[in-house]
Length: 245
Image (cartoon, rainbow, N blue to C red; front, side, top):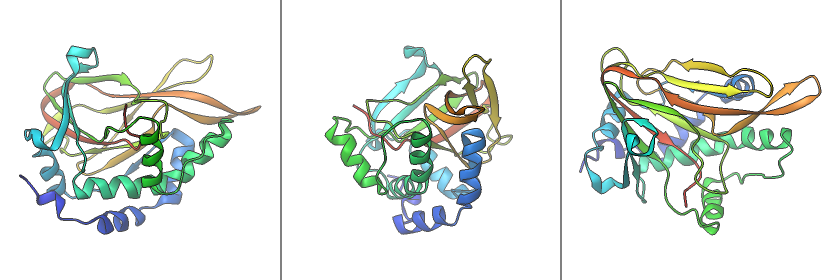
């Protein structure tokens, strides 16, 4: 078993997440519904996580996208217990994203509020029958793409999630850009390509977010995907904070 990337502790994950410029990131969420967290993982950690993909012992399921109309490519959902670095990052990132999540719900008139600690939120998910872990490792080769979608797995859904690019654009692959689309009421969709390098993370809206209009806040709908890979191989780590039924 490859354990190279498991060496960092949850304390290390918490400290590196805490060191990010969260005031600037929260402002970016408010403007665009997404923000880049640069160099969240080292190249060695990225390679170590990507190297786990062929080892089925780490995962609970294997999805071939074409079989479900999701696009082309494949991914595997991790099983519990998660590798220590992934578990630590998931908890630490959740703690930093909670203020935005609660503020968004308040602005959209949603009474749901999220607890400060990720373990407490997972307990709510499990009580609701959502017990299967959702962190996943995605793999794309030439010609693969991920259709626009939302990662909703049950009645409970935390409104932000994180994707971390494990491969280096231009060296490991070409094409394969991370894409977000936003649909505002009575307007055409807006698309945005998010430029990521190896180890960079993007935190973004899972489903919808509030946007200020002339009469207050209104709700906009977001989807995300990956454009066609033109060459090479691309791996991504996805950290979703709610569990699945």
